[in-house]
Amino acid sequence: MEETVRKLQEIVDHTDNIVFFGGAGVSTESGIPDFRSVDGLYHQKYDYPPETILSHTFFMRNTKEFYRFYRDKMLCLDVEPNAAHRKLAEMEQKGKLKAVVTQNIDGLHQMAGSRTALELHGSVHRNYCQKCGKSYDARYMLEYDGDVPRCECGGLIKPDVVLYEEGLDQKTLQDSVYYISHADVLIIGGTSLAVYPAAGLIDYFQGSHLVVINRSATPRDKYADLLIQDSIGAVLGAIRV
Image (cartoon, rainbow, N blue to C red; front, side, top):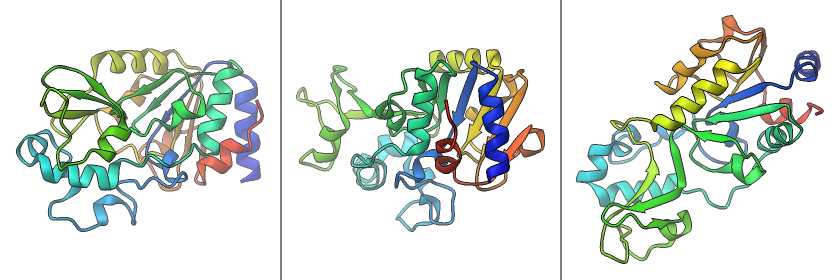
Protein backbone atom coordinates (compact mmCIF):
# COMPACT_ATOMS: atom_id res chain seq x y z
CA MET A 1 0.00 0.00 0.00
CA GLU A 2 2.94 2.35 0.59
CA GLU A 3 3.55 2.95 -3.11
CA THR A 4 -0.09 3.72 -3.90
CA VAL A 5 -0.35 6.05 -0.91
CA ARG A 6 2.77 7.84 -2.14
CA LYS A 7 1.15 8.32 -5.55
CA LEU A 8 -2.03 9.61 -3.93
CA GLN A 9 0.03 11.98 -1.80
CA GLU A 10 1.61 13.43 -4.94
CA ILE A 11 -1.81 13.99 -6.50
CA VAL A 12 -3.11 15.68 -3.34
CA ASP A 13 0.00 17.84 -3.05
CA HIS A 14 -0.46 19.29 -6.53
CA THR A 15 -4.09 20.36 -6.42
CA ASP A 16 -6.53 22.36 -4.35
CA ASN A 17 -9.61 21.25 -6.25
CA ILE A 18 -10.54 17.75 -5.06
CA VAL A 19 -14.03 16.29 -4.82
CA PHE A 20 -14.78 13.07 -2.95
CA PHE A 21 -17.59 10.72 -3.98
CA GLY A 22 -18.32 8.05 -1.40
CA GLY A 23 -20.63 5.29 -0.33
CA ALA A 24 -21.31 2.74 2.39
CA GLY A 25 -17.71 1.53 2.58
CA VAL A 26 -16.71 4.86 4.12
CA SER A 27 -18.96 4.19 7.11
CA THR A 28 -18.53 0.44 7.55
CA GLU A 29 -15.21 1.18 9.28
CA SER A 30 -17.25 3.09 11.86
CA GLY A 31 -19.40 0.02 12.44
CA ILE A 32 -22.37 0.84 10.22
CA PRO A 33 -23.48 -2.17 8.12
CA ASP A 34 -23.66 -1.77 4.38
CA PHE A 35 -26.15 -3.38 2.02
CA ARG A 36 -24.19 -5.41 -0.50
CA SER A 37 -21.20 -6.98 1.24
CA VAL A 38 -21.21 -10.60 2.38
CA ASP A 39 -22.29 -9.49 5.86
CA GLY A 40 -24.47 -6.66 4.61
CA LEU A 41 -28.18 -6.13 5.09
CA TYR A 42 -29.09 -7.80 1.78
CA HIS A 43 -27.70 -11.08 3.12
CA GLN A 44 -29.65 -11.06 6.37
CA LYS A 45 -33.07 -12.63 6.78
CA TYR A 46 -36.23 -10.60 7.39
CA ASP A 47 -39.90 -11.07 6.59
CA TYR A 48 -39.27 -8.94 3.51
CA PRO A 49 -36.06 -8.13 1.61
CA PRO A 50 -34.51 -4.79 2.62
CA GLU A 51 -35.01 -3.29 -0.84
CA THR A 52 -38.75 -3.93 -0.44
CA ILE A 53 -38.93 -2.55 3.09
CA LEU A 54 -37.02 0.59 2.08
CA SER A 55 -39.48 1.53 -0.66
CA HIS A 56 -42.06 4.29 -0.72
CA THR A 57 -44.87 1.82 -1.30
CA PHE A 58 -43.87 -0.31 1.68
CA PHE A 59 -43.53 2.76 3.91
CA MET A 60 -47.08 3.82 3.08
CA ARG A 61 -48.67 0.36 3.26
CA ASN A 62 -46.65 -1.32 6.01
CA THR A 63 -45.49 1.61 8.10
CA LYS A 64 -45.18 -0.38 11.35
CA GLU A 65 -42.94 -3.02 9.73
CA PHE A 66 -40.93 -0.30 7.98
CA TYR A 67 -40.14 1.36 11.28
CA ARG A 68 -39.31 -1.93 12.99
CA PHE A 69 -36.57 -2.48 10.41
CA TYR A 70 -35.58 1.19 10.16
CA ARG A 71 -35.03 1.68 13.87
CA ASP A 72 -33.29 -1.68 14.23
CA LYS A 73 -30.91 -1.41 11.26
CA MET A 74 -30.74 2.16 9.96
CA LEU A 75 -30.53 4.33 13.06
CA CYS A 76 -26.92 3.82 14.18
CA LEU A 77 -26.61 6.86 16.41
CA ASP A 78 -23.78 5.82 18.71
CA VAL A 79 -21.07 5.48 16.05
CA GLU A 80 -18.20 7.90 15.53
CA PRO A 81 -16.47 9.22 12.39
CA ASN A 82 -13.43 7.22 11.35
CA ALA A 83 -10.07 8.24 9.87
CA ALA A 84 -11.56 8.69 6.39
CA HIS A 85 -14.27 11.09 7.58
CA ARG A 86 -11.78 13.08 9.64
CA LYS A 87 -9.18 13.32 6.87
CA LEU A 88 -11.75 14.54 4.34
CA ALA A 89 -12.88 17.22 6.80
CA GLU A 90 -9.25 18.25 7.33
CA MET A 91 -8.67 18.39 3.56
CA GLU A 92 -11.63 20.74 3.23
CA GLN A 93 -10.43 22.94 6.10
CA LYS A 94 -6.97 23.18 4.48
CA GLY A 95 -8.51 24.24 1.16
CA LYS A 96 -7.74 21.01 -0.71
CA LEU A 97 -11.22 19.53 -0.91
CA LYS A 98 -14.20 21.40 -2.35
CA ALA A 99 -17.02 18.98 -1.54
CA VAL A 100 -18.01 15.53 -0.34
CA VAL A 101 -20.74 13.89 -2.40
CA THR A 102 -22.08 10.97 -0.36
CA GLN A 103 -24.64 8.23 -0.77
CA ASN A 104 -24.65 7.70 3.00
CA ILE A 105 -27.43 8.87 5.29
CA ASP A 106 -25.60 8.67 8.63
CA GLY A 107 -24.32 12.25 8.95
CA LEU A 108 -20.78 11.14 9.89
CA HIS A 109 -19.13 13.52 7.41
CA GLN A 110 -20.75 16.50 9.11
CA MET A 111 -19.96 15.07 12.54
CA ALA A 112 -16.29 14.93 11.51
CA GLY A 113 -16.39 18.59 10.46
CA SER A 114 -17.18 18.56 6.74
CA ARG A 115 -19.10 21.68 5.78
CA THR A 116 -19.90 20.95 2.14
CA ALA A 117 -21.37 17.46 2.32
CA LEU A 118 -23.98 16.74 -0.34
CA GLU A 119 -26.22 13.91 0.82
CA LEU A 120 -27.70 12.30 -2.28
CA HIS A 121 -29.92 9.94 -0.35
CA GLY A 122 -30.88 12.24 2.50
CA SER A 123 -30.18 11.86 6.21
CA VAL A 124 -31.58 9.96 9.19
CA HIS A 125 -30.98 13.12 11.21
CA ARG A 126 -33.77 15.00 9.43
CA ASN A 127 -37.35 13.84 9.88
CA TYR A 128 -40.55 15.73 9.27
CA CYS A 129 -44.26 15.46 9.93
CA GLN A 130 -46.18 14.78 6.74
CA LYS A 131 -49.14 16.73 8.10
CA CYS A 132 -47.71 19.96 9.56
CA GLY A 133 -44.06 19.82 8.49
CA LYS A 134 -42.53 19.99 11.97
CA SER A 135 -38.97 18.64 12.14
CA TYR A 136 -37.68 15.94 14.47
CA ASP A 137 -34.19 14.59 15.09
CA ALA A 138 -33.01 10.99 14.84
CA ARG A 139 -32.96 10.47 18.61
CA TYR A 140 -36.70 11.23 18.74
CA MET A 141 -37.30 8.60 16.06
CA LEU A 142 -35.20 5.98 17.81
CA GLU A 143 -36.67 6.50 21.28
CA TYR A 144 -40.29 7.13 20.30
CA ASP A 145 -42.62 5.20 22.61
CA GLY A 146 -44.70 3.40 20.03
CA ASP A 147 -44.53 1.47 16.77
CA VAL A 148 -44.91 4.42 14.39
CA PRO A 149 -43.43 7.85 15.25
CA ARG A 150 -46.11 10.53 15.34
CA CYS A 151 -45.96 14.29 15.55
CA GLU A 152 -47.59 16.18 18.39
CA CYS A 153 -50.25 17.13 15.83
CA GLY A 154 -50.93 13.45 15.20
CA GLY A 155 -49.33 13.35 11.75
CA LEU A 156 -47.04 10.59 10.52
CA ILE A 157 -43.32 11.42 10.70
CA LYS A 158 -41.20 10.40 7.71
CA PRO A 159 -37.39 10.30 7.58
CA ASP A 160 -35.80 12.67 5.06
CA VAL A 161 -34.26 9.62 3.39
CA VAL A 162 -34.68 8.81 -0.29
CA LEU A 163 -36.54 5.51 -0.47
CA TYR A 164 -36.77 3.25 -3.50
CA GLU A 165 -39.36 4.67 -5.95
CA GLU A 166 -38.55 8.22 -4.81
CA GLY A 167 -36.52 10.76 -6.76
CA LEU A 168 -33.35 12.43 -5.56
CA ASP A 169 -33.43 16.04 -4.43
CA GLN A 170 -32.84 18.19 -7.50
CA LYS A 171 -30.82 20.88 -5.74
CA THR A 172 -28.48 18.26 -4.25
CA LEU A 173 -28.11 16.66 -7.68
CA GLN A 174 -27.35 19.96 -9.36
CA ASP A 175 -24.76 20.91 -6.74
CA SER A 176 -23.14 17.48 -7.03
CA VAL A 177 -22.91 17.79 -10.81
CA TYR A 178 -21.37 21.24 -10.43
CA TYR A 179 -18.63 20.16 -8.03
CA ILE A 180 -17.80 16.93 -9.87
CA SER A 181 -17.71 18.60 -13.30
CA HIS A 182 -15.42 21.38 -12.04
CA ALA A 183 -13.02 19.16 -10.05
CA ASP A 184 -9.40 18.60 -11.03
CA VAL A 185 -9.27 15.40 -8.96
CA LEU A 186 -12.14 13.05 -8.17
CA ILE A 187 -11.62 10.48 -5.43
CA ILE A 188 -14.19 7.68 -5.42
CA GLY A 189 -14.18 5.75 -2.16
CA GLY A 190 -16.11 3.01 -0.41
CA THR A 191 -18.73 2.44 -3.09
CA SER A 192 -19.48 -0.34 -5.55
CA LEU A 193 -20.99 2.26 -7.90
CA ALA A 194 -24.04 0.01 -8.30
CA VAL A 195 -26.76 2.46 -7.22
CA TYR A 196 -28.20 4.75 -9.86
CA PRO A 197 -28.77 7.57 -10.56
CA ALA A 198 -26.10 8.45 -7.96
CA ALA A 199 -23.33 6.42 -9.61
CA GLY A 200 -24.03 8.11 -12.94
CA LEU A 201 -22.75 11.40 -11.54
CA ILE A 202 -19.21 10.15 -12.14
CA ASP A 203 -19.80 10.68 -15.86
CA TYR A 204 -19.63 14.44 -15.30
CA PHE A 205 -15.99 14.34 -14.19
CA GLN A 206 -13.65 15.97 -16.72
CA GLY A 207 -10.58 16.58 -14.57
CA SER A 208 -7.05 15.27 -14.67
CA HIS A 209 -6.95 12.48 -12.06
CA LEU A 210 -9.55 9.84 -11.18
CA VAL A 211 -8.72 7.91 -8.00
CA VAL A 212 -10.68 4.83 -6.90
CA ILE A 213 -10.28 3.49 -3.35
CA ASN A 214 -12.43 0.43 -2.71
CA ARG A 215 -11.83 -3.06 -1.34
CA SER A 216 -13.69 -4.71 -4.23
CA ALA A 217 -13.81 -4.04 -7.96
CA THR A 218 -15.96 -1.25 -9.40
CA PRO A 219 -17.08 -0.46 -12.97
CA ARG A 220 -14.71 2.54 -12.96
CA ASP A 221 -11.52 0.71 -12.07
CA LYS A 222 -10.32 0.54 -15.68
CA TYR A 223 -10.66 4.32 -16.02
CA ALA A 224 -8.82 5.15 -12.80
CA ASP A 225 -5.45 6.89 -12.89
CA LEU A 226 -4.86 5.38 -9.45
CA LEU A 227 -6.61 2.27 -8.11
CA ILE A 228 -6.23 1.31 -4.44
CA GLN A 229 -8.01 -1.80 -3.16
CA ASP A 230 -7.54 -1.33 0.56
CA SER A 231 -9.09 0.20 3.66
CA ILE A 232 -10.21 3.73 2.86
CA GLY A 233 -9.58 4.82 6.45
CA ALA A 234 -6.02 3.53 6.34
CA VAL A 235 -5.35 5.07 2.92
CA LEU A 236 -6.77 8.53 3.58
CA GLY A 237 -5.47 8.50 7.15
CA ALA A 238 -1.93 8.22 5.78
CA ILE A 239 -2.26 11.34 3.63
CA ARG A 240 -0.68 14.58 4.88
CA VAL A 241 -2.39 17.88 4.14
